[in-house]
Image: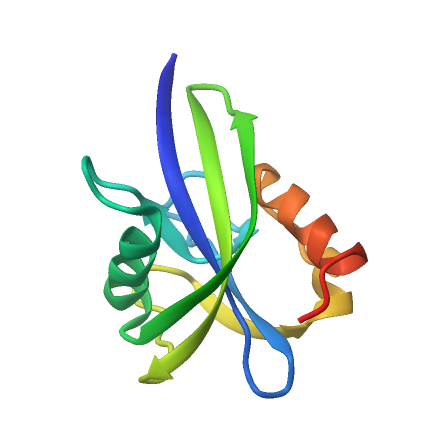
Length: 132
């Protein structure tokens, strides 16, 4: 089975809310929520991939601050290794260029969204253990 290494940004604002992205109907796993990000290219550092992906997907620049976790999830056709990082926006305002919508969500309310399975371990850590 194909395996991919991906990164996700847990982008935090001044109100301690986290930016959540709703996958569009055209994407795999349509209408699931996720932390925005994408695939790590060959010979690319995870943090660099995250900065690049957020610029492409949300048209803003982030600073990667701290690793949250790395999880592995086997979907029907692919095994995903997802590493999430707490990040903050240093320039720009997020725009949903690929996603259906974006929403700032208070940390404790993250579990109320219908998350993509690979993102759930990070959501659980953010809800129960990690203070932002």
